[in-house]
Image (cartoon, rainbow over the protein chains, first blue to last red):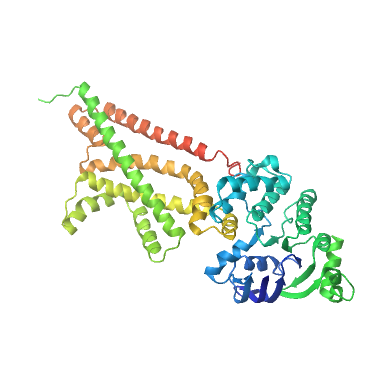
Length: 244
Length: 223
């Protein structure tokens, strides 16, 4: 279980997360919606230990990310896919994927590479294993980014606006893969602006507004008039996003 | 009566001087690069106190003339600490530390040139600070620093000529001796200059070759 308990985070005087509670059970796909600056990405960065909490607690399978000794174990259990891919530019697609399995999980190189190649093949990049990030398109880079996260066999996949930097065609390349992962039972925390897609793949949708979790509902209820749409802020957000 | 003609033996003397210059250059460059990179790593780990000390020492070394440093090491240290100092040792100490100070600057800026996002990604996947340095930062920082490093070393090669003033028999000192004997400064210093030029050119060429190799895959950098 991934548990976020009363988490507070401020940058200087700006409060970004103001007492957020969230629980993600294994097998669930939870989408996080909210306008820019609502704290979605910061929440992800708190879960994977890139930001220190000011208050509250985050545990990944009971490993507390605020405790240096437990952070490593917590990080092994969650894999992150970044908005801007964050690939290592001096390494080939395959090397990007196998670095952490070899160095952190101490997997034998041949084994890690075989798995890396299989992952690349599963996202349609079987023939691009030796290409460098600069030689790949944005959609291809993000698919490598997803493989890199999956190679660590995480229990929770954290996706931080993974399609925001991609054009519609590349976005659908990436979303197709995420849909497959959701179907296969991968647990996902999915920060996104792709509302329709979130609706299709999520079990639950949460809505962040100014660092506060306004709504946390099963997907169908979130989009129903008496559920999420009863919240004026959510209704306003959804109608605006649909117009765009 | 003095013998003012050039003799074939003078060529041998020049070759010896060149050997001393190149030898000292290589030794001090190796030591300097090693120390400078080590300092850079200390800064990467943000080791308290040590980091401030290094920054201060590097500042002092960068902002004072090499000749003054050389005099301090050769004349000042023996007088103050009551120890023996040969000209060659003084030259090695001074030039190594001076090179280290500038290598430190290059190392720090190269390490900082690597995108934070990559470092964060590596950390999230559980790599330790050392693993991040070794696998993500160092390979890229190295490719990035070869250019400035080559420029620095070419300059440090010329700076070695300063050690002739404390009596090291390097290329410049041999040149000065030949000049005193033959009284043909134009010929002597032209020959000496050409030898420095060829040595520097060799350093620059090797640096460019290495850079090309290290950057073979980095179409992402540069235009």
